[in-house]
Image (cartoon, rainbow, N blue to C red; front, side):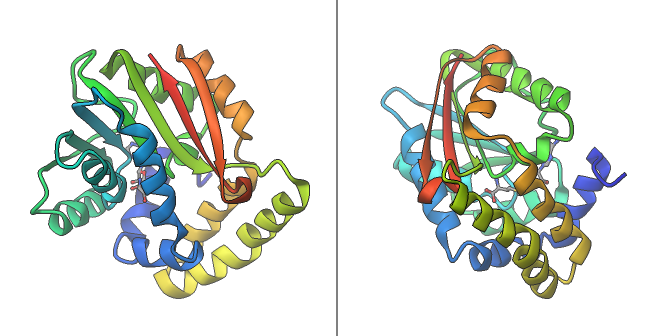
Length: 233
Ligand SMILES: C[S@@+](CC[C@H](N)C(=O)[O-])C[C@H]1O[C@@H](n2cnc3c(N)ncnc32)[C@H](O)[C@@H]1O
């Protein structure tokens, strides 16, 4: 079965060199806008420290750093070495502490961060619902009481015509464009397959509540293709 942690790790290792380019192509550049919006929601007065989990090539970590005008200390983790190496190389001049770590085993003490962000990766943690829950519990552990989780992710658009269009795009367009530009058909076959199967925004909110978060809210972006979830420890 493809959906195991080592398989996901291998997929991202294989596509690390073209990851950003393919994202920008597939989303017509909107992925940058979605991260910026999430970072603006995330960085509120009083936020001094942030952990970006599943940071990939570091774009969300950088969005948070910029939204905080350099006043938020940002750490960022990912379990895939080629991805995080690319991030550290690209953003060497920014003061971001990139390191290797798994989302369900974060190398930080309890109550360490004011904010935890995750962009376009909750889907990858959803190998099983239990796996996702374990990661959310771990996120909650490293947040201080009153600290916030901000997650931006594709979702199920509430309007059925848009939902069908998104599923068509994910099933038939994403794997083809991904295969051509990344050279890895199976990687994008897997990634595109997770989009139609992922939770709706109300379902993900419920899962966050089950993991112990409170004041869970979400807002849709771009006709409900993407949602930003905010939750409080
Ligand atoms: C779709 S990418 C998102 C990257 C980045 N956050 C962005 O917005 O582009 C998912 C990332 O999650 C990482 N990842 C997946 N499962 C993980 C896990 N269990 N622990 C740590 N990182 C994980 C992958 O290596 C990959 O870099």
